[in-house]
Image (cartoon, rainbow, N blue to C red; front, side, top):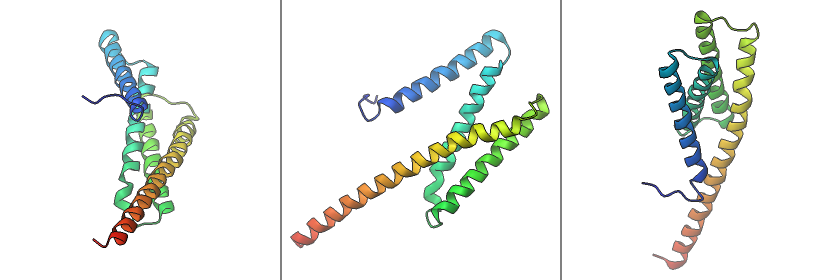
Length: 145
């Protein structure tokens, strides 16, 4: 078992919270025998979060392409999926007349913030690794190994 420390405290809290919320939703469904609106909303947020993280995690496959193009294609794939999900949901249950706009905004704003944070952290880590590699190369060149 992994020991909780400063580096993994917040991710551990997030995982535990997610598991508890999903467990609560399933338990309530078993007890009540029906999905409530908030249960569906929480499950939708979970599914969209998984999709967004998955798409962002695939950046390494597209490193040979310009970053802005990759970010744009990732966003278009995800927003297309969100709007398709909304369209399919509308076939089973009526949605508000502004439902598509609301889903677009509700997904785009947090996703935009997440993209900025994700790529900022990623480039910071890359810069740190490159600095360490330069230091190792300089040490190795000085020792003539």
